[in-house]
Image (cartoon, each protein chain N blue to C red):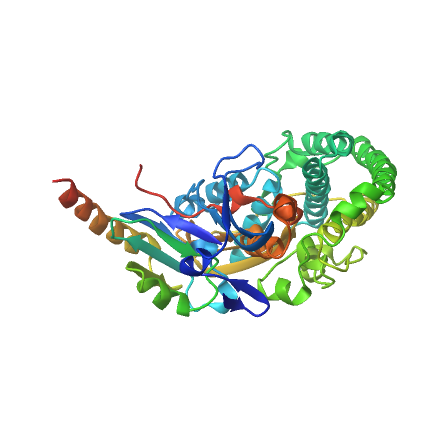
Amino acid sequence: MKIVLRAHHIISLAGYIVELRTSFRNLIVVNHSDEPIKLEVPVLNDGWIEDHKKLGLEIIPLNDDDDFLVQFQMAKHKLDEERKQLAQ
Amino acid sequence: MVTKIDGATTCNEVERQVFETEINMGTVHPAALEPYRVRLFVEDEIVKDAEITVGVNHRGIERIMEGLPVEKANALTEKVCGICSNGHIYNSCRAGEGALGIEIPERAVYLRVLAEELERLHSHMLYLGHGSEVLGHETFTMRIFYIRESVMSLLYMMGGNRVQYGISVLGGIRPRADLNSREQQRILDTMDYIDEKVAAFAERFVADPMVMSRITGTGELSQKQALDLHVTGPSLRATGYAFDQRTKMFEYEPFEFDVITQDGGDVRANILMRATEIFESTKIIRQVIKGLPEGPVINKDWEMVDSPVYKSYIEVPRGVCYHSYGLEDGKVRHSIIRTPSMSNIGAMQESCIGHPVQDAQLNIVSCDPCFTCTDRAIQIIKL
């Protein structure tokens, strides 16, 4: 199954992860490119990260001790800055 | 063609170009109840590959839950699904109670099981109605919806609403959902009615040669494929694999029920699977009413403390539902909700492959899809 991540968008894949086969609890996925990119879900294993990095996505894996909200806001802020520069 | 998982095949975009025809459906289409996109790659009317794309209804529920007080976050989970709303708030409360070590009064445990089984009844009947509609048998659809209405009335009586019941809260159930003796008798009477009517419906359904020939052998999914694709719930049990999360839940220990299985994994097995499970649910509900303990329905004697991530699994009508979160200053962190449709969508794709294109919609529907509940990724930037 696929979901589409549009150009210059950010999503979190919390509910799309089969937690028993992966070492992370959440993934923040950022599409910095000008093209929509399809993601393969559910995320079944750690190799998913490398496979999707090759598509040009930025992927931030999160574990129990990481602060999801801080990481997400940081990634979103970075993306917002990029979007502002593109709009100029 | 490349092998994705043992027994299941998929193609990349280049390989797909060799197929004669690509049929697109959706994302919004009158034949589908929810927004999703299906791409069918067809050769000589046989589906060679299928791809389902979801993500149209991103609502970001897990993102909104992050940082909310746990009571508010629990209430929000009920909005995940319009069919198994009780299952989500039940499981979310269960995760919170596990994290905080809250003991639940026995009467509340029984009434939670009752609500969950009523929800299973109405969901399975909705499935039978939807399946009959896709088969083109509107009489069956109307008949089963008429029977389902009696369960909706019971849920309305218990929770005060037809869709969002709000029965479970941290520490037990809302006192409003407690049942007096008259209401208990009404539930027992309705169970008799359902048993009689559903049995008549099932007999009529099985005796219809047109319907049975249409659904037998259609959309077959092998047990190995189902296990590889992480399929859960009735869709897995329809392939003959006897796994029911209820057998692992402490709430169901006092009750006797059978784990129903069917052979074949086709549309027929899926439909008979749900129809038979209806009788197991009515059996459990009768046991709940018969053994309903006296006492309080909510325990308010607990303290909020910080806790690591706690995981909870329950069996909702479509399969295993997963909720987990940790608590920090009474607020939710690291929230994850996984609905059973998440993994069942893989089965929907695979059950289309190798079958005629006209069966595709029926094969998808036979896995009891709930795409909107699956769409909970985060979309922060507006279009």
